[in-house]
Length: 224
Image (cartoon, rainbow, N blue to C red; front, side, top):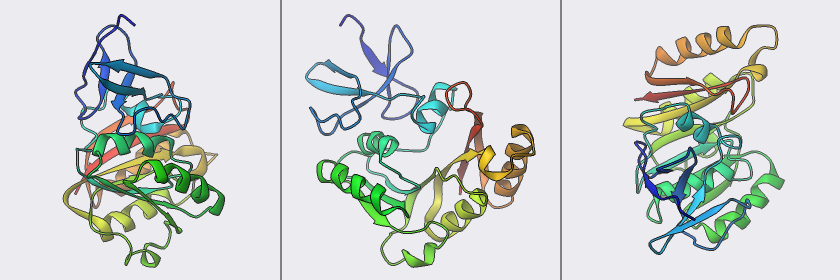
């Protein structure tokens, strides 16, 4: 392959010098649980991060200037699902970082356990993000709260978890799913209402509508 990679403005993300694809450097070379495209350069392996499969990748492709995620960070991931996005965050935080992955679906957590056997910085937890008191004894204070949950009370879930777990100066990333909140209102109206709720308690540092990569979604990034 003739293309070369260079560091992106987002920490721990790499981009093509000619092209639009973005990548993370794999901490588990040779392991591709999501059939992702690989690129090898200077003895390192990089995994393509698809913005049509991840709200985080979509936000980066839409120009987010600071995702907050750094090497060695501790992450609380609400709505981790089967682990596509978290596998890339796993690369970003590195082997000394930690991701606490919360999901209420036993089948999803089962799949995540298989992923965590290879990516040992992911800790799957079967729990409901609506009730952070049920896992407060199992999760430490974190540098990042990342949420991707399709429920009507998305902002309330996010705020309650940030209040309990997010360190002062930490970052929160909220992927808002407009159609899960209200099918009668416009996306723009829903996004603005959610943003106003979040701004009452946290400082919004970035806001991106994720189309065309993710329809009916926006990403709100905050700092505590």
